[in-house]
Length: 350
Image (cartoon, rainbow, N blue to C red):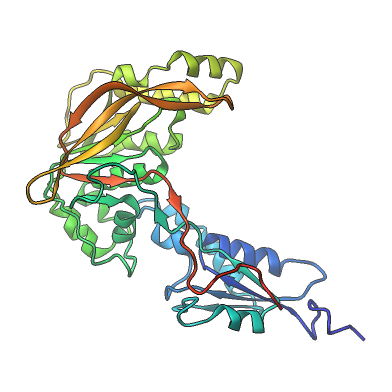
C-alpha cells in the first residue's frame, strides 16, 4: 500500500497553490501537472476575475498573435487536477496562513507590478504617467479603466526604448481605423479617435545598438498607416566603443536593428499626419510645468557611452542639454515588485 504520508500519490496528491494567474503561473502549473510519478493538484489564485495576466492586459491590442498563447493555457485549465479561483486577493480575501494549512507548497507568480520612477524634478506633474497605466487602460484592466490622459496635447514623450515603450508610441500613432480592427477597449478607442497627438518622441538613454526593443517591433513602426518615422543621423551612428564591441563579438540582430534605424534617419518627405521621432543618447533630467501644475516640457541631457569595470557600456551625462516641448510624458524605464499583503515571509509551510 502506498504511503499516503508522502504527498504525490493518488490517495494523497501533492497540493500546490499558485498565486498569480499570468503566464508564469500557468507555465508553473503546466510543469507541475506534467511531473511523472508525482500526482499533483494545482489551485491558481488571482485578484482579478479573469486569468492570463499580462497576456490579456499587457500585450498591445494590435498584437493578437502574441495573445494566442492563451490556447496553451486553456489546455492547462482543462486538466481535472487544476482549478482557477479569480477575484481572490491574498491578504484580503485569503490569508497566507490559510494557504499554509491547506497546501504543501505555495508558488508566488505576482511579477513586477509597478513602474520604476525616473527620480527627476517634476516627475509628479499632471500629465506625467507610468507607461503601464496607459497599457492597462487601453487593454480594459478594471483597475485602470477610469484613468484619464490628456490626449488634447499634440506632443508626447515616451521615455524608454523597450518593447513596452514601443507599444505605447505605436498605439498613440495608430489611426482610429487601424485600432478599430483590434480588441482595444471601446472607451480607449473613442478617446484615441478624438486624440490630437501629432508628434511622439521615443527617448533612449543609450545608443541604437543597446536599445531593448526587438527588430520586428522597431520595423513595425515604419509601417504605420498615418505616421511617419524619423531619427537623427548622428544618433543612430555607432560610437567607437560600440563598434569595437561588435567587432569582438559580431551580432547580426544588433546590426540589423541599426540598419533599420539608419533607414529612418534618411531625409524623406513627410506624407502622413503624425510624426514619430526616435532619439538616442538622451536622458530627461527635469520635467517642466506651467502655473497650473501641468507638464509643458522636459529638459534633456546628452549622454556619451563609457565602459564600466565589468566591461559593459553605460551612459554618462555630458554638459550638453536641450529643451523638448511636450505636454504628456509616459515613462517606461523598468519595473519593480510590490510586497504581497500579509506576507512577511515567502517560506511555504505544510
